[in-house]
Image (cartoon, rainbow, N blue to C red; front, side, top):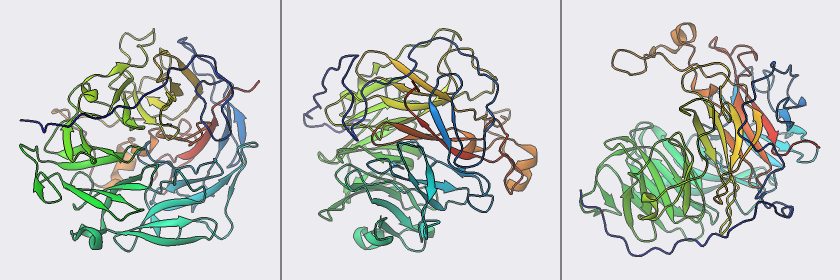
Length: 462
């Protein structure tokens, strides 16, 4: 395949940062953390006994404060969890509001006191009315988040001060394209209020349209990944595929998309240049984007810029820790605290795809922050205590999962929502994650172990 030729792209100038730094200004994310930073193996202690929603305690290994956000009384005994993607920005600008989800996709808002860790429901706003799925917050307005209207093919803007939603993007009207079964897929918001949205198919992995939309100007572009066109114009030698998920970078210039079918590598769309190119070098693992840059984890944390040449030249952020000869942990990265021109640490929650009990090396089953400044430092905040029972495999290596979900509860302990996908606050001081607390939180209505949301303060108690 002949790739599209790109014009020279100006790369971000990233400042070098010393290991010691003055305390970050209010709402500015830390560049270093007051936390354990080593590669020692700390066995998990006995499981801390926890109380109901609102209960605060301290991680017994790393000394950071935690609060339990939800319990069986939060929403009709439903499990409560963080979004499916750690890239979602679930916090407002000053960490006083956040949104979590029920097992049925309802969006539940909370108020949060960053000083006391008090979590509270919002009177008259048990859920965001008529909004489901992803609810990314604005990076500019502290009382604003975005969401999908559950009845229409519309992205809305929800104002917490007014407790009202207003239409932002009518997908059919703006694009003239069909929305099948009212399915709007992955979407996000950049720091300058540009949106990305996948849609067009009957569900995830079937979408063929990737929309970029500027909420300020109304300007839009559509990449049809199945036909290989941008705004209807053919892309030379385009690989054609459907999409699994996508994410827009904070600058609003780049969007990466993970294929569902038709390609085995992620792709990046430089909207400004109107070009697309594949990520072929060490492309595995989940990823998070900042301002024209990215972190991904193909069993070792890597940093690279999003321009075509930068994608080919990843840099190792942290070496394998001592202990297990192969550090095969999966991780979900979150970089909502990214800042333009600064090497801000990226947050991660790790788990093992094959259940092994207690990790035999550092950073396993933990909430950690990884430096992006080249120092190779890793800060450690908590064991998330979520047990992930990965599904059995058939003879061909495929997941053997019952189609009947009622049978799944009895025969297959795997539950996607047990994975500790975490979301860092915009100020880089808090991290929310999902946990089944080692299967001790009771059962959901399908008979599986339930999950709840927890928040860890990213600072060791003095």
